Length: 188
Image 1 (spheres, rainbow, N blue to C red):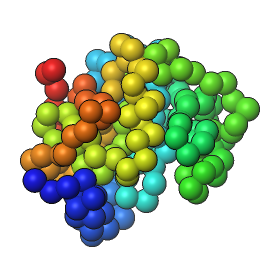
Image 2 (image 1 turned 30 degrees about the vertical axis):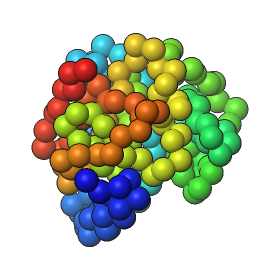
Image 3 (image 1 turned 135 degrees about the horizontal axis):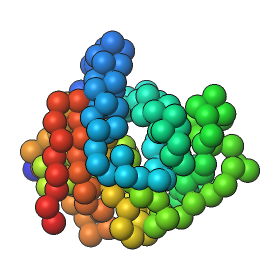
Image 4 (image 1 turned 135 degrees about the vertical axis):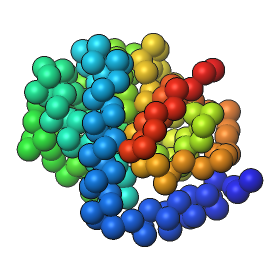
């Protein structure tokens, strides 16, 4: 099995090869699949991420959630260790935050992980056991550790599925993985 560092490099190389058109089409399919989930449909509050260049764009899902009357929160980097959820009222309201990532304005209302119904999670790679490889800072693992009963649903392109992701004790297992081509329900 590849180390986390080796798998990160391999996945970054793989994702850099996707065209903007492929990313847009696959992202639209992911958003449609996520919006069809019972967890999404029953949710009052969701947390979605505002994508970086080689991540699924959930902008379409965020627009849908706002139109559906859901409370939408996005991650905000508080410091080098923590993210928190901040309310986003419109996509146009997003501001440029830490690391050049779009985020919610810092004065918007905050929410704790265990107050959310669904948390959509980005990553570089996922396996069928629900393991996730992030970028290495463990922001999401720390945030998800306090999620309580909230569903942690990975949003990814199918090319991000790999046979095995190396796991450490602090890594949080996803409840579902949704890609442009499939929906994996993870059974603990």
